Image 1 (cartoon, rainbow, N blue to C red):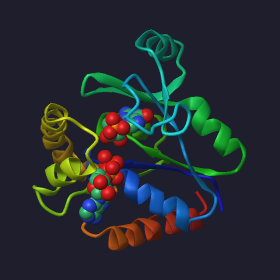
Image 2 (image 1 turned 45 degrees about the horizontal axis):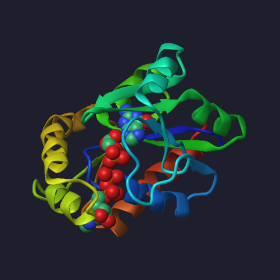
Image 3 (image 1 turned 180 degrees about the vertical axis):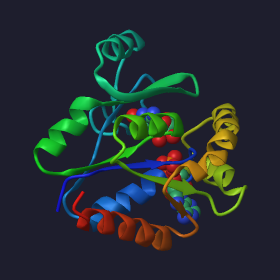
Amino acid sequence: MSAKVFVITGPSGVGKGTLIGELLDRVDGIEASVSATTRQPRPGERDGREYHFLERSDFDRRAAAGDFLEWAGYSGNRYGTLRSEVERRRDAGASVVLEIEVQGARQVRAAMPEAVLVFIAPPDPGALRERLVGRGTDSDEQISERLRVAEDELAAHDEFTHVVVNDSVERAAAELERIVACELQSPR
Ligand code: ADP
Ligand code: 5GP
């Protein structure tokens, strides 16, 4: 079994975090990369656990130094995957899962053609708004901005090898688990 990089992408609120949580519970030998961001922590989020929360100047300095495998501007903030997050886990023999938006997923595909990319799609057009409202972490204004970005992101789904519709968590998690298990079995 060889260590792999899995990219889980798709619009905000579609359930990427939820499905990755299920995946980490179900599949051994796979770890989540902790991204860096310039956005403010939400209540309950801890530096180094959900994200590495960086000042904009620090983020930009690290971007200029080439510390990021990928990074993107999203909804007024920056988000990126530190190379060290991926390398440290792969060096220890683990596969790594990245939860990132679409621009970042394209950068990973260009930098690492062997990475496995999975797009998570909503079951119907209204689901994203319902889920973002239900999650209760974003203001109405932030939700509108995320839904605006989602229109372009949804149009990008056919760029990705795997598309999983998150209709029910149980069904979608089982499909994602099958994709990941199958990739982990293959030699490269
Ligand atoms: P993302 O990480 O893509 O922004 P989350 O995993 O935070 O999305 O999910 C957004 C909200 O939708 C959360 O409140 C989550 O509990 C809920 N959710 C996730 N998957 C489903 C589903 N299949 N059906 C209904 N609600 C879901
Ligand atoms: P949130 O603010 O809801 O935590 O994240 C907003 C968006 O940024 C989500 O679509 C999330 O997947 C994405 N994101 C989180 N980390 C990264 C990252 O390291 N790189 C990129 N490109 N996007 C990220």
